[in-house]
Image (cartoon, rainbow, N blue to C red; front, side, top):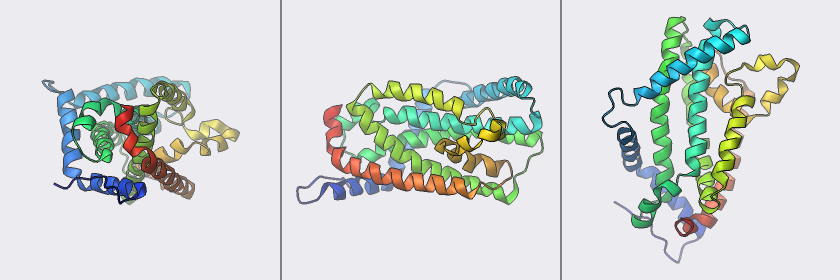
Length: 271
């Protein structure tokens, strides 16, 4: 097993690049740790992670009836929309919340075991993708009940999930560094997430905004969700959504990598 060492004859940029590359190479390590986190959380539980699926099913059913009635929406169209929206939003919210604590919660491991810092972020992302796979079952059941079949366009959802994961990595890496240094930031982000939930079309459809629908386009989270939601509902996402999410990934990774190269070695001292 190779180890990333910080020799004095290499630049910080090269060290950060090698850390990220080595972290990706150790997929067996972070995937195993992610599975272990899930198994540990639901040890001795009868349903295991499917308790998440059950709670999500209850949430979708109750909110579907309430908001479908309030907005006077056809449940045959609204419930599939709501189920995939809530499942994807839950993943995004977990990424934002747990990304803040990606280094803090693993303080003992970081101080005692020499492995790439990126492994810790990949571990958290992987375990949340596992949870997402359990929650997405609700959409599959709802789609089967209402006879929804996305067809070939549904395969685009995998590209949407891939782009979500690419953005999630830089967000968790950046937030992890910031929140390790400034411990008040996680509380601020938790409050912002609650606000974003209501201004992002998760429980409501964008067309309900009427003439102000253009405001939805300014929300990058809408585009991230839409890249997954639209294909599963049988329609191709707009090119605007693809462009926004790809540019977000490029800009986010550029800024995060520069910050990571500068502050990576300080993370252990901030813990």
